[in-house]
Length: 103
Image (cartoon, rainbow, N blue to C red; front, side, top):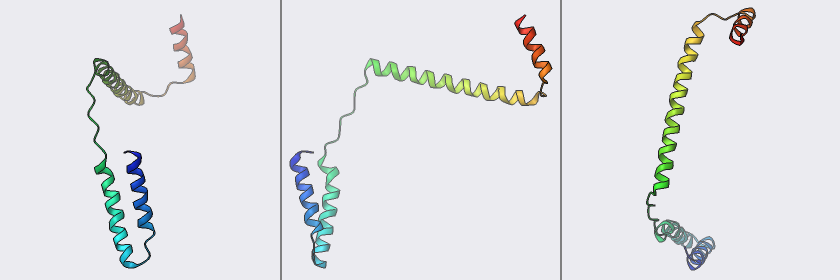
């Protein structure tokens, strides 16, 4: 919108706010509704961007990362479910396993 459009908009809103009688108030409400509703009409819609090779590559990479995260998360949930079925190990058993792993 240009500066002229904003000045007309602000003047219309100011005029609508200064209504004194019921008749003027209803006219002002209609004017204000017209001003508010016409804001979207006056603006021109943006053109859609053309996808570049870089943006296409970035989107492909992003989709691949998202799919990998989803697969990793699903695998983590599966592992968590199988871990809950095993009985809890004592501290001595955990220490013995860590000693075997390091040797």
